[in-house]
Length: 155
Ligand code: DQA
Image (cartoon, rainbow, N blue to C red; front, side):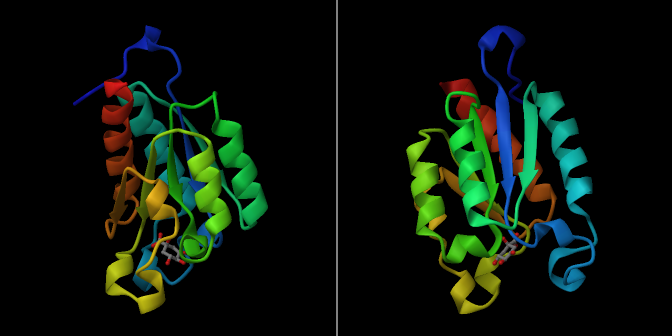
């Protein structure tokens, strides 16, 4: 497993969570499971530390706040993991923000969006992402960290 060594400069990863993800655990558990966002945050912090990454973890229900978080990563973070929730399927503004910061992006979804409603099959933000992980619940964030540490290690 790749691990970032300490003197390599910037190894902060920003994990951005969009609308309604604050309700994980109680929100449609048959779709999203029983894990809470706090559980996923702890998982990310622990796995990030094992990989030599420090993790910033944010959630907002507001598109503009998500955009501000993404802008704030520019020059400060080594990469982004993004679960934009329903904004995935609607937001060109989020796509533009992700394209603006010039950082590697991994897109994550807890559910397999391709097994669900047709309108969830298209992601506007996918064009800004190196890859997408979907369908593995909270474990997908762990996989995204693994993917990102490899990308960061290459650069
Ligand atoms: C989601 C999938 C989206 O379609 C949905 O709107 C969400 C969560 C997921 O993680 O599976 O809010 O991004």
